[in-house]
Image (cartoon, rainbow, N blue to C red; front, side, top):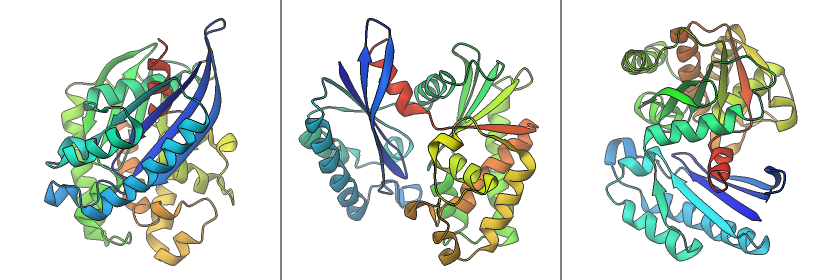
Length: 306
């Protein structure tokens, strides 16, 4: 049986198509695609999706619909996260999804997002790294923190992400000392709320997912071209993350864009995203982070057969 999962976040919309074998309870990946559409552009201030953001998203939806039809997908689940939770005109977005994919977009809560991210991130890494795990899912509008062993035991969705922090404090991606301090302050304030609900003291392995994390990992490893096979399971130290913050902040927009592993849609927001990641690592007092190429998309796919 072929199944498809779509995750539409603040910055990107991603598609995963897998073939499930119910005899062996295993999955084979067929398609994994990402388009940067910046659906959440401006939502932090306006609380609305812009017409341009909806147009970019529509183009991606049409492309994904064709890929899904070509692969003869039997089951599809579409989840939407932070930006859609905040937008007052989300029905416009729902209508686009409905008319192009013939499926209802599910606006999942931060807690649901955290649980799906945890399942996707830990499934392929559990044999290599000890539990309990902290999964950091650093998105465009929010950052999910999830602690658990076989399943989430506690979680919190922080209202900070690479797009939100860029738009709020550092448009362009080259923050001043004061702007960087403001981003760190926002993260620290959100983390205080998280610490009241999530027990970080028992964590043995920290796993990071989503584009900011894997881009920081690519920089830390010094790879010239983005390679998910190298990045998945890579161990990155807290010092390497701090160095990435400084490097991204000191590079011009054009210099960041020229980096072989940098997705064009991430050039402006990577510095703020790296600062968020760096500050979370400091708050958790973690020495290292494991990068994962498996995330909420994989969790959504498994939810269709579990």
